[in-house]
Image (cartoon, rainbow, N blue to C red; front, side, top):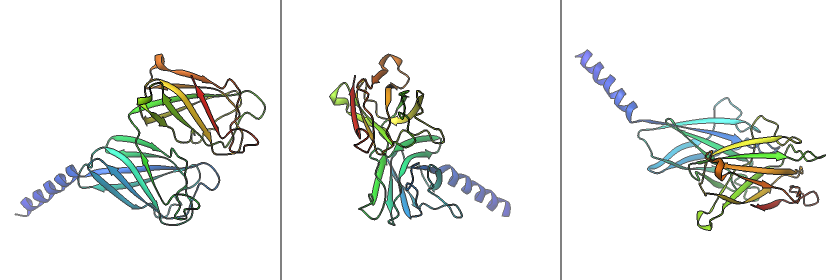
Amino acid sequence: MKQQLSQLLFLSLLAAQALSEHYELDIVTGSNKWDDTDGTFEATLICSKGNVEFGVLDNPGVDDFQVGKSDNFQADTDKNMGKVQCVKIEAKSDDAWMVESIAVKAGDDVTFVYNTEGSYLSSDTSEGKDVMQFCKQGDSTYVFEITTANEKWADTDKINARIMISSTRKRNGDTTTGVLDNVGINDFVLGATDTFTLPNLKNIGVSGCLFITAQQDDAWLFEEIKVTRDGNQKQARVFKNVDKVWLSSDDSEGESELTICY
């Protein structure tokens, strides 16, 4: 009898494991001063078949949300919640936090979402937004090869550049990157070419225009940006900064926004 009960318990555990699903959030904090936080934030993963509640994001004994660092949070559900759509984060305190990007692991699948608008999270709405949703844009991978000019002061340590790409066909719309930042690497060095690979952007077909924004005042001058989607070199395009426009959030040093069309 005991053996039968043990077997039934074992089978029940196996069944529970078979029905459960494991989810993880790897959240990267921005790399600029003041991007970190000691505040309290709650996260919800929004999927096609329901939500996964992560609750308060807090790893006991760990100082989470440090500048330029990634933090991992985990949750389990009793069933598969379908395709990943968005991560919603709600601020429960006024100590502002800059989320740079989030990798969502659902079983063996990984989905990337980005802070495309560059807003801070804070319950104090004079400092940021109290709720933000970071959503999957599509299934395409874009590669940006960006060459910094080989001129004095053209390099930068802090520029917080983002790029929105519009299609040559209006109906295809656009897609937007998060901050162009290879964590742990010194990007945008004089005369160097940096490569940024961003999965889960929208397939907009052939790139028509780039809308580049800078949110920091350390001025930057780039020569060109090559955009390749899904490894399709035939549709890759090189956008050249012909007028040598400097980028900076300080209007005495450059433009905070720049549009370049092919």
